[in-house]
Image 1 (cartoon, one colour):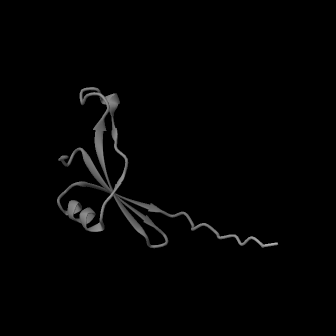
Image 2: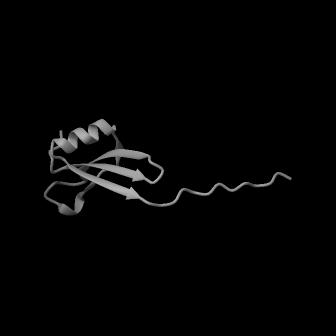
Image 3: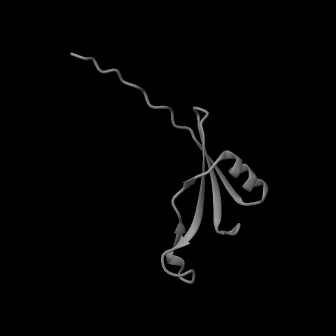
Length: 79
């Protein structure tokens, strides 16, 4: 179980209206006394309910807005 200091919850929002929720934990590859070996883990998907529940409980939450335009779909002619 991670404490409020070793976990963060991320919400990524896109202009399309889609939102994706993730959890990241601090991990170490050596020991906790070696700061160079500490890094964030891979983002793990969670539900929106979990994100908002943890936000209420005081955990660190990050909301990122991705304002990239959607990709264009190109039609190729069949010849």
